Length: 116
Image (cartoon, rainbow, N blue to C red):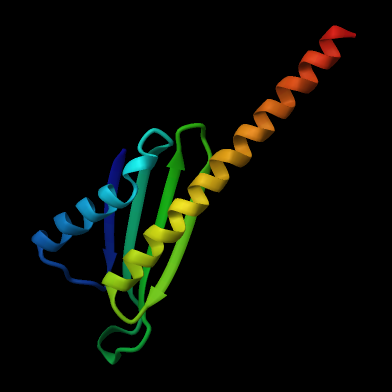
């Protein structure tokens, strides 16, 4: 699983970036066979004004070609990343299951039409 981090209007030390990368890798460890690439974008919308302005956008490209995008907004980056990871696990799992069911359904229909 290839993980890419981007920041917009957020200055993070190199050590924090490696911690975030390992946190994302550990948080989605059970999804490594399903996810080809992850792009995590961290934004600070309001700058120094504060408020719920830290955004985490997680884009996951699935192995079978699908894509999942999860966005979360919080007062601090740690909370935004944590909630984004929690939600992305559920969304990726649901999307993979949905694609699997659709593939099985189309295979079944193909078998039925070829049997006729």
